[in-house]
Amino acid sequence: MGVPALLDAMRATGRSDEMPTGEPTADQKRLQAESIAARGYWSETWDKVLALTSVLGVHTMAVGVPALLAELKRAEDKKKQS
Image (cartoon, rainbow, N blue to C red; front, side, top):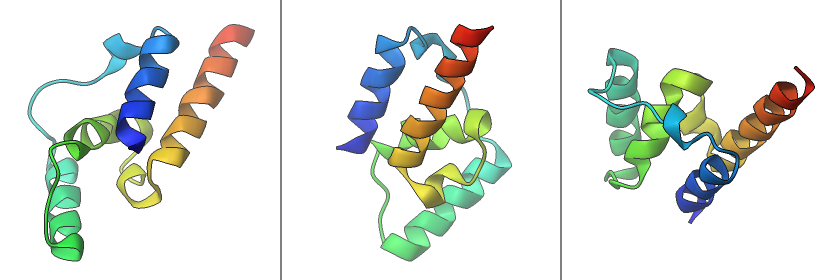
C-alpha cells in the first residue's frame, strides 16, 4: 500500500525520473537479504523502495515508506526554496 503512494508522490512532484534503475548495489543486496531473513519472503513491490535506498540512504528499508514520503516532501520543499 505504501509503495504505490510513494510512486504517486514522485510522479505528482515530477520526480519519477529520479527513480534509480539498474542492478542493486552491494548494500541494497544486503538489505534485501536481511529483509528476507527477518520476514521470510520478499515482495517485488519492495524493489522500488530498495532502489531508492541509493538516493535516500540504506536506512529506508528499516524505517519504511512514511519516512520516504517525508524525505521526498522535505526535498521538494527545499527545491522550491532554491
